[in-house]
Image (tube, rainbow, N blue to C red; front, side, top):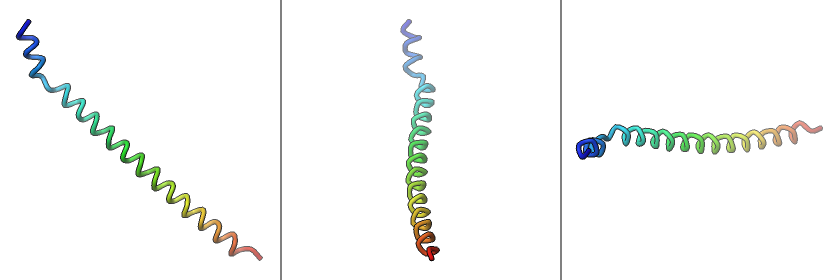
Length: 59
């Protein structure tokens, strides 16, 4: 029984998989945050352009 428990303590393959999962989750959060920020900025730019063009095109 002691040898099985000692072998489980030395096995680090599960810890590696968890670490890779955490890294992937952090990268995903960073990408989503960046895409949201870029989308908000682009939306603002297009709104400004639309306002400029509609005011400029008025008779």
